[in-house]
Structures are given as C-alpha cells and as structure tokens.
Length: 230
Image (cartoon, rainbow, N blue to C red; front, side, top):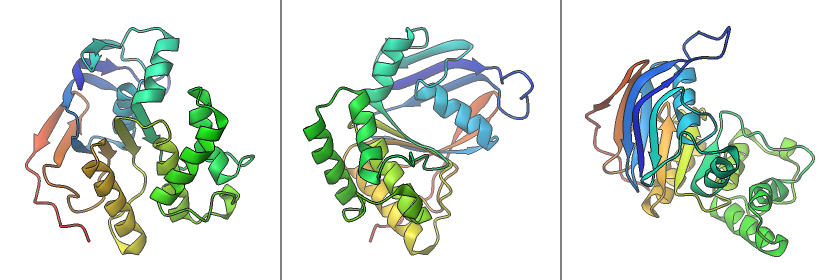
C-alpha cells in the first residue's frame, strides 16, 4: 500500500534540531499497525507528514497503492490526502467557531459530500467514539480525553484507509487511555491501517509492527505479544 524508498527531507531553514530525514525505506501493507519509536518526535512527525501527503520529500520515491505520488500536483495530492488518510495531531485542533459535530463535518465538506450525508456521518462517528451526546457541544467544554476522541472521529470522516496518529500523548495508563487503546484496536480490527508515533504502552494488536527510527534508516524490532482487549 505504502512504499518509501530512500526518502530524504531537509529541515526548514533555521530548524535543524532533529527534523531531517535521509535514506528512509519503509513499507506499509493494508491492515498493518505500525508503532514508530526512536529518533525525535519531530523526525517521526516529518515522516508521517510525508506519508500523509502534507509534505513532499526532497529526494527518494513514495508509491501509494502502486502509484508514485511524491511529485504529483497540489490538487491531486490534496484529493488523495482527503480520501486516503486521517490525521490525529498532537493537539485536537478543533475549531472554536464550530460545535463538535461541525468540526467532524468539515473534512466531508472539503471532499464535496452533501450536507445531509455529512450530518448523518458525523453523528455515526460521534457514536462510534463514545461522544454521541456531545455533538452540539463547544470544543472548549470537552475534556482532554473527549478532545482526543473528537479528533479521531474527525480523522475518520472520509473513511480513510490509513490513520496517522502523531504523538497524541497516550500513556497507556488509566481508564481514559485504556478506552483509547481499545478504540484503536477495534478500528484496526475493522481493517484500518494505523501508524502511531510514540506508542501507547504495551502492544495493542496481534501482528503489531514496532519500528525504531534514526535520521537515516528504520529498523523493525521484535514486538511483544499484544494484550487481549477487554
């Protein structure tokens, strides 16, 4: 599904503090669950941004579903990004001027979905993540945990094939994080590919791939057996 070959990215001018990538090879198959560790959070973010078509690599090749995408035009990249990837950033980034349901509908609007279908889909996703009663709530009134759930619902808006979770702050401890772990495991069981930066404690799923990054390569590590959900 995703194949990176010798991908390199130079950090922005004046920001050489652990953001650059060089010679990265990585393959991701449908239904994979990858946990990225090592390097720095900024390096992992840089890799996820390239995979999610937010940034272009400076060198190397990137094939998505067999199609070279690194040099596609901005409009086609945006179309693919909208339909193939869902992003969960470090902060929820919910818009204050919209209620929670409106925030989840926004990616669907960009994708051209009719409004009545957007509303129905948003309600379904809120129910899916356990926020069915919070759709008309202002984002500022959500707890930190609820904000993360809303961000996941928004990331699922356009039914992506791959969820990119960028150091979302999961510790793998406590009831809230356990619910998040169970939600991600459940989404993966439904066929969603997931790339998680930073990890959230013990392995989530059978066959989870643990990837350790350095600035110039990735290394797949032996992964402990996943704990049973429940």
